[in-house]
Length: 102
Image (cartoon, rainbow, N blue to C red; front, side):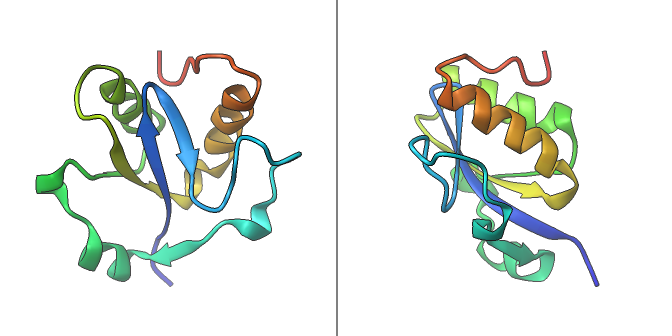
């Protein structure tokens, strides 16, 4: 089995995970949609600004770039980063600006 990726959008320095809302009461892993890398490669659009990230540093750079560049950045996040994505999502819900990768 290859790698799997989660879809999210970075906007204004915040991370919005597909199928989760800032209003959800808690993180629910079962609601996450994971796509195989082969599928992501078919829909991934780097010329439009999409990012495919495999490290915390790459994720942090993508989120920070949304503060100063494109209004939204589609990010495909490797499943090994789920714990970091959860932390960022929880910070976002509390209104705290994330410290990811800083």
